[in-house]
Length: 218
Image (cartoon, rainbow, N blue to C red):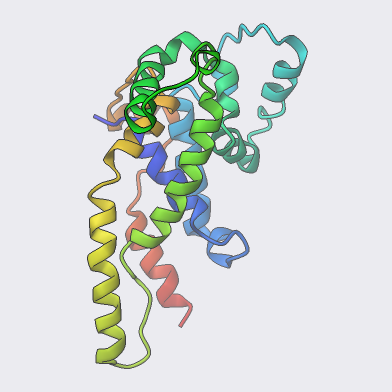
């Protein structure tokens, strides 16, 4: 079964690629965009799939209406900037809020009552964590480029970097769990067939498409 972590990983991958790279305007990029659209729709992050009931009236509705053009840039922004939180209730995150207070109390010893009485800023938490996670993704994804010739020195450097990257990658589970909880506090699970048949997810071998595209560049 597929969870919202699949969407998170697709977004991390998308955000790690230079948007000016021709890779993003050709088949590999087009498929990535469609995959994100399909996953976002499946996990209720596309406004048109909601019966929106927000107290902030017109501003939130304008923000949601602006996305109905299927503009992928708007959709990515909607996810990356946590604007999807306009579709959520603060109470959806009660467990995360409790965990946040417990973690901060353990780290800092005490929190002034004035702070304890404030709502936890879920948007700030999410955008700060996602920004960090994108940078970690860029660092920890295994090197897949082409090396000029065979250089033991350069390969040794890559090995040392990968050793540290593996440590980071193996200890980033909690951050991913928090990001996924914010994206989908309901813990939805869907089948791959449902994703393809109902939400139009491209059923392709993306690694093969990427490789063919890169081979054609040389």
